[in-house]
Amino acid sequence: MKRRVFLKGVAGAALAAPFLSSLHEQEVKAQPAPAPRRMVIFYTHNGCLTNRWFPKIESGPLTAEHLAGTTLAGLTPFASKMLFPRGLKMFNSYAEIQTIDPHDQAMGSKLTCALINDDKSRYATSHSLDHEIAKQINPGGASPLVLSVGSASTNIKEVLSFSAPNTAFPAVVNPKTVYNQLTGLFGGGATTEGDHRVKRGESAIDLVREDLRSYQSLNMSKADQRRVSDWLDLLRSTEQKLTPAACNDATATANGVTASAVDAASSGGGFGGGLAKSFTAGGDMMMNLIALSMICDMNRSIILVYPGYVTFGWDGIQHDADHHGLSHRNGSFAVGGTCKNGVLDMIAEIDAWYASKYVRLVTLLDSIVEGDGTLLDNTATMWLPELADGNAHNTNNLPIVIAGSAGGYLKQGQVVNLEGRNLGTGNSEADCTGDDTSVGFGTGSNTGNVPINKLYVTLMNAVGCKAPGGGPVETWGQFDSRDAEAGITKPGEFTELKA
Image (tube, rainbow, N blue to C red; front, side, top):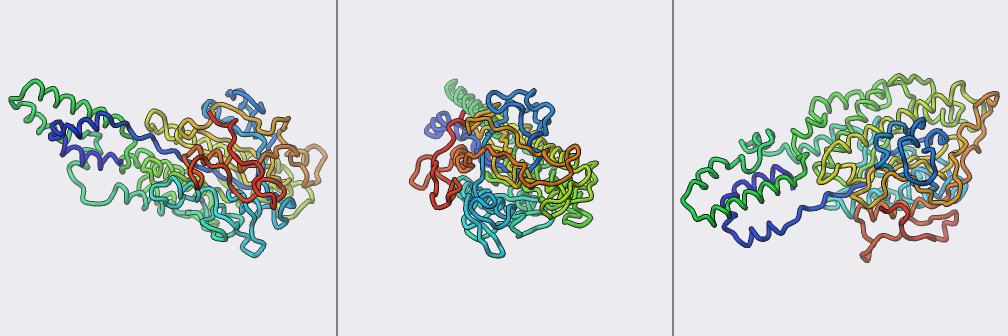
C-alpha cells in the first residue's frame, strides 16, 4: 500500500479505531507484508575478455581480494552480496542444435531456452522468462518492464523478450515513457493539504494532531486513556514498518527523477549524434526509473538491455569500430582475418564501462531501504551476457553474476562451481597478442556445460513462481542439452545456489 493512500485512509479513522475492539485486535495481530521479490536482468552483447572478468577463485567464499584486478573490481564493496554461478551454458549455441546465426540464436534462445524460427524474423518459438515471471508475480500479472537505450528495434539481434511464440516484445527506449507511467501512480488528482504534509514527511498522527489533543483532554477513564495510548502506539509502529521510500514525487526527486531531468536524458536519443547521451545520461536515467518502479511496486520483472552494434565514443572512450566488430578482433563483421591494432585494449575499455554501469545499478538498489534490508536484498539483479567470448561466439562457461538474494533465497558472497571440475577462464587473449595477428574463431572455453535452464528455475522459485499444478517450478524451456528432441533431461533447481 502506498504511503499517501495509507495516510488518507488511516488518519481519518485514528480517533474512532480504539473503540472498535475487533478491528483493534486484528491490527495488533497483523504482521507487515513481506517485501516483494523481483528479478532484474542487466544484459550486454558480444561477450567479454573472459580471462579478465571472472573472480580469482572458482568455488568458495568470495572476498574483495578475489575481485581486485578483474573487470569487476568495482564490485568489491558488495562482495558479501554477490553470487557467481560458474559453469553455465545456454544450449542452442551455433552449430550445436541450429545453424542459423550465432547472435540470432543467442538472443532468441537466451531467455526462452527454445528453438528460433529459420525465417527472416528468427524470433523465438516460445515466450521468454521475463514474461513468465511477470505473469506470475507482477501486480495484476502486468507485462515485464523491458528497457533499452538508443533506438527502438524489432530486429532479432536486439530483441531479448518474447511475449508469446514468434511475438517480439520490443524494449522501451524513451525514459519519458516510463516516467509518464510512474507519475500516474502519485501525480493524479487534486493536491490536498494532506498531500503537502506527507511530502514534508509528516505522519497520520500529524494530520489529526489538533483533534487528538481535544479528544485526549476529555474526561475519560484510565482504561479509555490507556486504549487511546495503545492505539497511538500501534499507529506509530505501523507507520514505521511502511517502506521508507514512498511512491511519490518527493522520492522520485530524491532519486534524480524529475520532469526536467527525464527530458534532458531523453533528448538526442537514437543511433545518430545523440547516441552518446542515450548510453550515458539515458542509461543512467533508466536505472533511476527502475529503482522508482520497484519502490512503487509497478514491476517485479525488469530487463535493461544495452545494444551491441554501437561504436563507443563517450566517457573518455573513442573507438573507430563498433563493439561487434571489435569482438571479432578484426573490427568488422567478417570472420577471420587480421587483428585490429589495439583491439584487446578497446574490448577491455568496453568491458570496464559496462562493469561500471552494473556497479552503478547495484549501488543504487542497495542505497534504498526496504523493510529490514534494501531493494537489492529483495531482488536478484543478474548481469547476463549474450555470449561468453565474442570471438569464439560460445555460450558455455558464461560470465554471470547475481547481486542480491531475492529475499534470502539465494546464497551470498559465494562463487559456486556447478560443473565440479576445473573450469578456467577461457582463452580470450589467445589471438592478437605478441606476434600473433591472425584471428581464429576457436578461442572459447571447452568447459562450463551445465544447462542455464536450471539457473532460471532457481530464480523463478526465488521470486515466488509456482509450477502449473502448484509447488516449486521444476523445468523451463524446450531442451537442456545438445539433443533438442530429448527435452528437459535435468529438471529441478540448483540447490547449490540456495541459502
